[in-house]
Amino acid sequence: MALLTYTPELQEARANGQPIVALESTIITHGMPWPQNKEMAQQVEGDIRAAGAIPATIAVIDGEILIGLSEAQLDRLAQTQDALKLSRADLAVALATGRTGATTVAATMICARLAGVEVFATGGIGGVHRGAELSFDVSADLQELAQTRVTVVAAGAKAILDLPKTLEVLETLGVPVIAYGQDALPAFWSRDSGMTSPLRMDSAAQIAASHNMRAQLGLPGGQLVANPIPVADELPSAMLAPLIDTALREAQAQGISAKDVTPFLLRRIFELTDGASLAANISLVRNNARLAAEIARALA
Image (cartoon, rainbow, N blue to C red; front, side, top):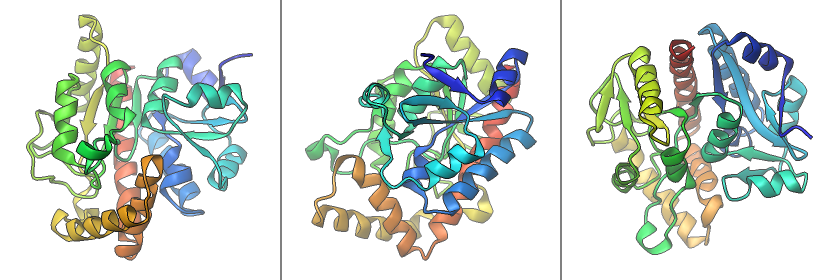
């Protein structure tokens, strides 16, 4: 049995050497409610096509890694209530047991690498959770960035995380963290985390050249491109900080841990912002998809 299953569109794109952008599926199953999740996924795919590349939404359905989803498959996934949240640790088990699951940043990077896709657009990466010095809750996304050669375009790490510790771990792991078009490191819903990015680049061509240079040097791992949310859609850090603190206290009081933390916090921030965080989330994902398409075109 083939490990990867491609849509006809992606089979043709691979054969013709067209630029391809990978997309994760956890944002569909765990990041947004129905039907906004399906609408968002279709918008993001449309943005990538409009920018001259081919989208490849990645998911596992009935034990198969799908590189690209048909409309029926996307519809099914967007309404699946019990989809697994797949990372490096459980991807193989899901395949071996015929399960259905959505790919996190780490699992999407693994599948994209297998499919020969070098650029991946997402919303925000996982990282070091607040209180990790006690819980040891650190996302596998960080290790994946250190070992899997895929350039990841995100709006930084999710703002619910401990951003200084996340940046420190990425530095320790040797992952290039590149702010796009500004010196400040963005923080998901906000353009400025209050920290300066270690690196800055101002064009997709520069990012693509760096990706290729890392390959020539034989360096493992990818690059994290931190692309700030559009000005019109950002939620300022000062407004979000007390809401995030409230959501974190609620999660702790309810004993929520491990993979359940991020979906809970995102849902509570959505409620506490009266839906503004969802609109910002959609905006930043689409913005990242457009930049990723530019980078894929430069690589192609």
